[in-house]
Image (cartoon, rainbow, N blue to C red; front, side, top):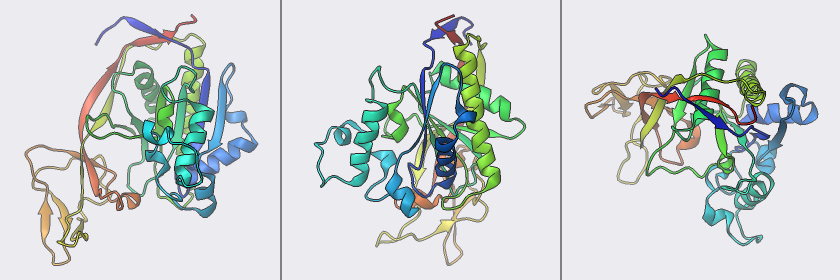
Length: 311
């Protein structure tokens, strides 16, 4: 691990997004609360803006209206000419990019926390897009340490062929936060998400105040590939997630372990010759994306010492 420290510009503008998927209620509930009373998210010298990203989907308590808002923040969609014929979420993406971006621009928001839910048994999860980002690794280390002994997992979605044009990607430092099923509110999950945001904002405040964070390391789960359900000749699902795999996100899955089960009772095991760690197991919203779960590998990321360039 390198010991020298890097200086980063202080964080000035932070947004907290809820309702990117309109049926993921924890973020919706928290953001609406903070829009009415933002005392707990304010920090000296920092602009923190709570924001409902997909209000029409929130109103209907559905994932989206026309298309997935969390997949349309790419140059093609953001550059389309504004018209009534555009899908609602593409028009909304352009509005959000105008308010919080523009994407890949020095004027964009420094950090966007995008609050999400999942039907998978993933617990407290932070999603990281860049394995070389010292500031985010330091922040995630701070959040994980603050939440302990409650586990907090880091999902690294850096992959050469799997690109995510996410809502949060317009920020310089995008962060996704979340556990729990869509369409419901649970006090325990809401409390966990609230704490994750609190610790993240505390970290930013300490960083801006000149605190130096020493070198650190975090365990992450890096995506390898997405796995679809077995399908018949019509393209219909032909087997379910095996009971031994259900709710076993982050747990080691070895070659030969049961993965799928047909209605006839046939077990389909994990192939290959390496242990993997499944995530987003049987996620309800991913049936349309033809994803039964994602395989990850476990590794350690190191961050250098960091401090604000103002100090």
